[in-house]
Image (cartoon, rainbow, N blue to C red; front, side):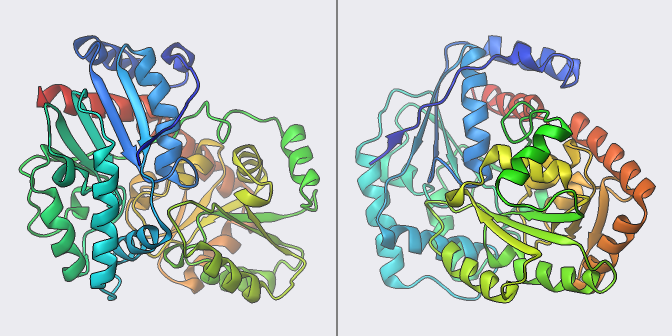
Length: 410
């Protein structure tokens, strides 16, 4: 059944002097026009991944602005989450289609959740493929329905897309990170491109002084002072953690003391994560300079904050990527990034801003080595990346864009 997620209280006033003033002003004006609107946000997990992080920040701010917002997550069996992971991979281009049993597990679980859904909302915002079938199973009632896709569906597996497409036709609007992600023959007439954003005041991004950040990493066993590069992502083949290790070992031939941290977030809706973790652990081969951490072994948002601040370079070697919030998170901390030229990453790192975009393991290693050797270049890229995030990828801008859409739906 749908389960309500509790969140804290927060005020938009806290973002004064951090986010651009015109964005804050327009956001408040839009909220006044929607005052009292009842909004339901639905996704598949309350922790582990960018969507849950965004909702944990967005919901309190929307409430502060005078909207009545609930956040609920789907309940589901292991079979359901195995099916949705297969669907997720297929929509990103995996050749494996869904089996009949997986499609049945998906539809049965969606129907069970739909029965527990209330009808007293003006807007329902459904995030990603897992709950996409709720509208067809429940019916629209009096609400406007929006499907928010956070993954790269530009080249989906045809069978998987045919299955999902049939569940989306009745949505009032759909939102993608980029226009290029809209799959062929999309059934909604209204399609918007709205990029995600980071919360600069969340525990993952709030300012930490160097001394405190160093104490945090020392406490979990990272050898400081020392040279450090980090990748933060789910343990997922699309994030290419094995390629990161390969690139790192090329760099180690030149900088022998360099450490690598691979930090993975395990999520309720990602049953493949532990299998990838085992592969990465075997690839690390007990190398004392490669450290693996997860949110289930004591590394959470504050620790990630410290890693992103104290790493000389953050790596995000994605093969496919919806957006990659960790890129903006790292740039906000003025840490340069070496990232795959994939999905929404180039949005955050235009040419010459924030770091280097790469398309292979060899390019990744060369870019890491360049930034590790040229400290002034690394600092300049970090500074430009910070400003890029301030102008375009902070939470109030995201909320403004989303409220613009809701206001236009009536």
